[in-house]
Length: 151
Image (cartoon, rainbow, N blue to C red; front, side, top):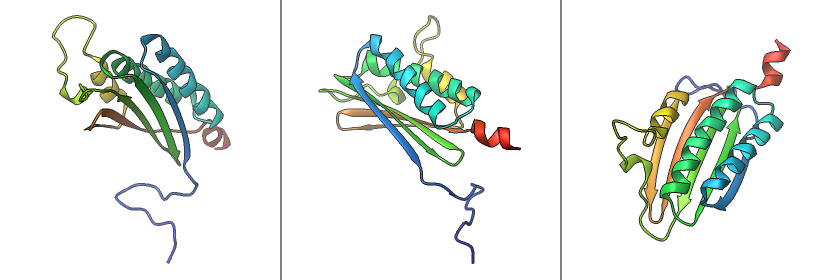
């Protein structure tokens, strides 16, 4: 019996996951730092440019929400295992979170569309509000540049 069996249509895990975390003050001006961090880390991991761009857009939208609606701090966490990338943005505050799952987009205007954009770019999205933290996770099925160039 092989140790690399597939479950629920997912490919077997063949490598240890890669992880990265950045914690910042929840300020609008620091969202660009968050985006740059994600782009740099994913490039270092060999993630293809189109997948990096999608992840950076996701982090930009979720980071802007965290800076605007969150508390004192926000974080971005990346996890890559084989072709599965999980992007997680959290905000931490002193009051119960105004989590993205509780906000309804407005009909007009430029605000309130971030989570819809994230849902369009990602294969899955989940939100979690616990205590004084709101977390939004998005999953991407990605291709690494090194993998696509070898074929």
